[in-house]
Image (cartoon, rainbow, N blue to C red; front, side, top):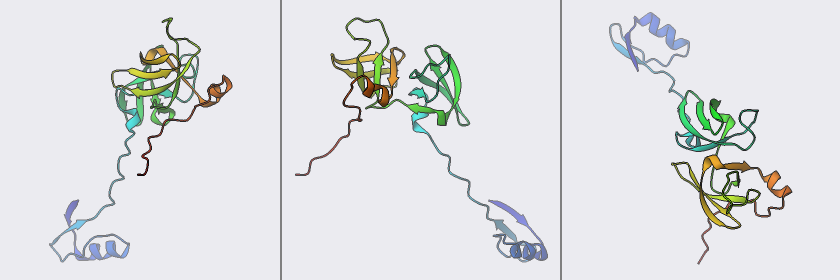
Length: 170
């Protein structure tokens, strides 16, 4: 709120133009009511430390690559991918969540590379708990690749819906 003193003719002219000032007497202070600021829209999936994927792709960040948000400022997020670190607009990123589909792109032999798993939990440390056909595994995000529903259906994955918690009526 801004406080000022205005002569009566100026205050009346301001009121006639739709100003929201109170009508002061000469020498009195009045408070000019300004429009409230728009609330800042927070994007919790872009918090520092969260695992995200870029909704686009190019030669440096292939489709499905997962990265970790390292900093945020003015609608931009700095994301560290296995191939490097870049700035992206927040609306071009999507947070990795439970229920998303991923495939393993590491070298451990006990996890088949062609197996598609469902994310159960994403930890702030970068570890992702994934349910594969061979069992549950905790895997660093940098060894996972996001798989879209269309690709999963093409290779025969049947359950592509995210898990929903329901409470049975008694």
